[in-house]
Every structure is written in structure tokens, then in C-alpha cells.
Figure 1 (cartoon, rainbow, N blue to C red):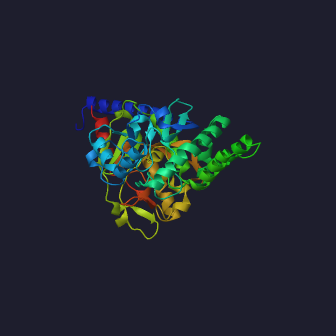
Figure 2 (figure 1 turned 90 degrees about the vertical axis):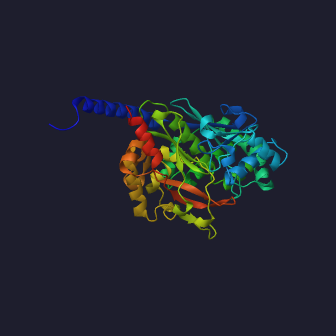
Figure 3 (figure 1 turned 30 degrees about the vertical axis):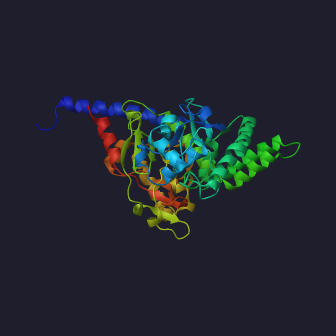
Length: 430
């Protein structure tokens, strides 16, 4: 008689059953999240562990000397904006000796778009998951200009826009949210998916729905005439097309954190980039980052502005990938046909891409649904073990950035397989 001993088979079956139970719990928590936008406040007042000399950045942690491009420029600019240094040379010295601490956003319940840079005085959106009670944060978007700290640019114009958002826009938005008693985000995401958004690279419908809700509240607050601060808020909402991305990132972070730390679970709770690496966190491995070098920018495909090519691009970090952990972005490509030339190429290819994602996920979201798939729930709960078994990696819609800083368009990013394989190995070890 051949085959494995009965004890080995029993151990394997028990291990698989335990993993399945852990994953069922993790995906149930992920899909049960009901995020609410509570307010906007300076990061130093609300973000756990934030100090006046902390600068948060996207990606798994790197030593300061390894930052070399747009993310480094953004951190230096943030130090100057915060008044932590008098000039770039002093900022560099204080960053090198650790007087100014560069910390990964995820360790502070925060996510950041592209460079992800955030300081204590910068306003963040505060999102609470009503189900778990967890809060998550994301810095307010700077506005419409392609030159921004988010895209790895620092200059006087960037500083002026940051101050405007901090001093004028954010207090006005906080006032509106206080009047509303917060704003539930799940209904907005659900409707936006039905209107052609993926909620990562495309959020035009969500932005319009959010702006309508805010302006309705402004009318309620303006019975004696519209105040100048509310006019400034309305002007900002017209131009800040990426604002809702920051809201949904915080919403997805709160949801993913509710599935964090379940022993044995292979559910992905975070994916991100710094300038050098792709990073992965899995529920059963807690706060451990599994990393691999980023693929060459020549592998990115999509639509770039102004005649740029991939030769002009560079990675500057990013944590908007948190949207894919909840089934949005590239996972929900079939919902966002307007993005076909930024992503898979054709409507049929967009549908095929989402259909492939069901092979590597643990469930379907009960609220977030795709009209083109007969309102099937988005593929939700990326399973590192299924990724390792199939070789199918998550499809990620990503913003493209230039080597010298600035927004260059949108692309499809396919992360390296190795971190998923390593996570599966670690969680299958006896």
C-alpha cells in the first residue's frame, strides 16, 4: 500500500480545516465593515502615535538612505512645510540622524496615496468602521494640480496648496460633516460601482455623489448667505478629482484592519509600495511585511498623458492598493469600462480580468456589486495561498508618476508573486 501515513493525512486535513475556518472569519469581518466618514482633522490630533517630528510615508519600511527619488523629495518637502528644518540640507541631516522619524503609514492606522507623505499639521480624513469600531486615516488630497507632494514634487506652489487645504478647506469640510453627523460611505461606493467607477483609478461618480451631499449640507448651513469658506470648499470639490480616492482608501484600511491578526488566516490585509519594493501583509502573520523588488516600469501598461512613455516613469510608493484588498480597483475592472484603455484593453478583457480574480479570493462583497456581471459581488478577500497555488496575482489599477515628479496617467500593475508564495509557506508550516 502506498501514500502518506494516516497521521500525516489527518494532520493535513486538520490544518486545512483550521485555515478554512480562519479565512471564513477574516472575510466575514472584511465584508461586514460599514465605513463612515466622521470628520477631517490635523494628523497630530487624531493619528495614533503621531508626533511633531514624525513623517508618515507609503510602503514597507526602508532606511532613509535607500530613498532616492520622488518619495525622498516629498519627505524633504514635508519637513520644510512643517518647519522642521530651515533648508533642504538641514532636513537631509535631520532625517539621516533620525531626529525626524520616517515611519510607515500602516503602523499608524493610516494609508497614503503614492508617496503617502503626511505630517502632524496636515489634515486627514477620519473614517470609522461602525461594525468593528476601528478608525483609519488618509491625508486630504491637495487638489487638481499634477505637481503635488503626492506625486513627488515640492515647490512653493505645492506648499501654498497644502496650506490652503489645511487652513481653509479642511475646517469647512469638518463643519459640514459635523452638521451631517458623518457620512456613510458604503452607499456611495455601491452606487458609484453601478455608474462606472472602480474606486481606484476612476472615482468620478463617487466624487460627484460626495460633492452633492456636501453641497446640500452647505445650503442648509447658508440660510443667511453662502459664507466665503463654503465657496472655497465648493471650488475645491470641483477641482480635487482624487479626493474620494482618499476617502475610500481610509474606508478600505478600516475594513482590512478588522480582519487583521487571525491565526492561520491567509487573507491579505495590506499591499503597498515604497520606491524600491512591493509589500504584503497577511492576516495570520500580523504586522510582518513580506517584500520583493518592484517589477521594471517597462512592464506597466496603460494610458499616459502628454506623450509620456514608460521610459519617463518611476515608482514613488503607494498605498491606494488597499482598495484592491476589499475587491475594488483592478479587482472590479468589469465595473469600470471607461478605464479599458488604462487597464486590460477592451471591455471583454476587463470582464475576463475580474473573472480571474474570483479564483484567488475568498468571497464576494454583499454590498459592492458589478452590473456587467449580473450584479455579482466584487471578488473580495485576496487569499495568499490561492495566489501561490494558481500563479494569478491581483490586478491593480495604479497611478503613474514621472521620474522628476508629477502625475503621468494610470496603469495596470501586476505585483511580484514571491511575497504571496512566502506567506503561504509560512502559514502552512507545522
